[in-house]
Image (tube, rainbow, N blue to C red; front, side, top):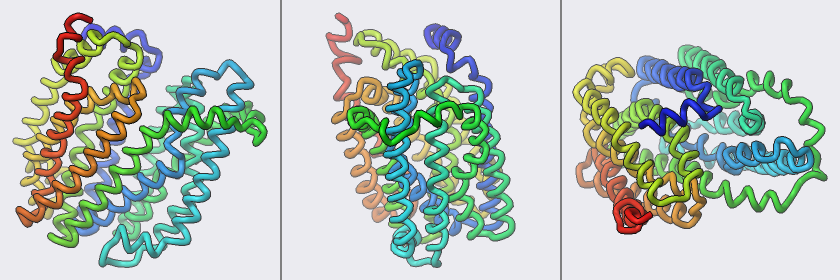
Length: 433
């Protein structure tokens, strides 16, 4: 724990921890307010539809930006003092991202009806929402490009402030649209929310306008593209596949159990996302950069068990409290109509606990660019997650099967992770290192 505190005191990024904490808190509050509005004005059925659309939007946003964000931040940070290298970096990211975004926008716009039939099975026609998404997608891509530049130049304070203002703007628009147009308004808010933040980001772009002359077609570097592509492939894989698997599971629940039950599963997933946000932020903030720094097996082992000893006990207490307060939580975030969600808490909480335990170790894949280890374990996870979901949903004829599958899948995934890193964590090598 001392090393974690020392790191927080020394690391320049974490000097804005209070702002980051505020940003996370506002995201949680925004999510709760939106969920409450959906519960009051739309209900479980609408929440299921919104869940599918959110997953679709998330996946295609990742495709449109080629998963470049984290790689872009790293390389911009590395070359920010070298004008020539910086020009190649931002030009390559901008133009390749621009081409990818335009292609994805065209595909979504001209295939809106086909996409509608996939993500909104046997329900109303919302193809026009897909077309709106296609139109605003370039603004999302520009926003992420701008974010990567500001992050690469260590403009953390303005970045977090933009995030905070953007979240407030997005939730305000979402609540207004839901109030006025019910399900249609909620769906529209999902596809435009991230793009709206670009209006705020323009301030940041103006502050970095001296970089604009560096963005030229002639500065595109295929060597750099190859380098960043390998870096981004791992990040983009899970960002695309996991949302698509969530759509597949939710659609299976809709077809075999019902829309309301799919809405209950989405409600449980949202609650899970809210309470895991702090843990995932901490892991991204400390674990990933720390693993990138260390090359010693003993240090790796020490960091993993230090996290387990210091953070996990607090998480256990929090999860236990959540289980006993589940009825209060469901009523507070949603409404009495969502009472069946209470039945899903036990398996979801257990699954999330194992998920955090495994994710801490799995960050080593990203830190050390263990490409095939990462790709194969993630592929294993998504296949197991879908197949076990289908099996348990059929077995119980109830949405409870989906959360049981969540737990079983992450237990199996954790076992695989422990097998891969077993010698580092428990073996003789770890002791001798």
